[in-house]
Length: 126
Image (cartoon, rainbow, N blue to C red; front, side, top):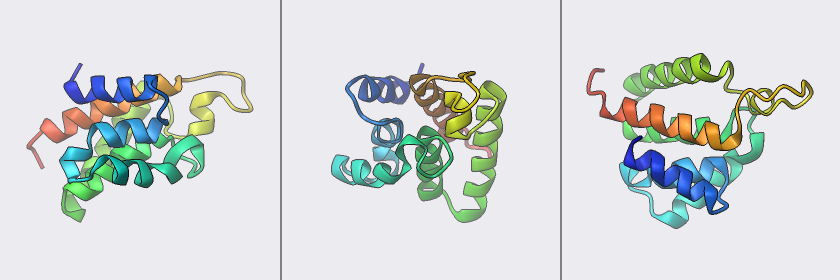
């Protein structure tokens, strides 16, 4: 487990939303301070944008860290890995809303997003 993954989990345990936990753990990668990270993450939380907030936060980091062409490739890679682990990137599907079948807990989504994002950032292949 990476240091940023541990940070994301601790932020989530302290009560931050899934998106705020991931974005706050990786804020130094894109030069955000804590306040900016929390404000930026707010609209991503709780499935308000359909996708899981932890996924959206990771994609935000990627979009702001890399040029557009590289970011799109890395986001696709991120989503493929997340889906292979959890079957979806859609919040309501992950939470089992309407089906009663939870695919992944919010904490699990935070953990998986942070781990995948850490791997993508460490991977220098473009």
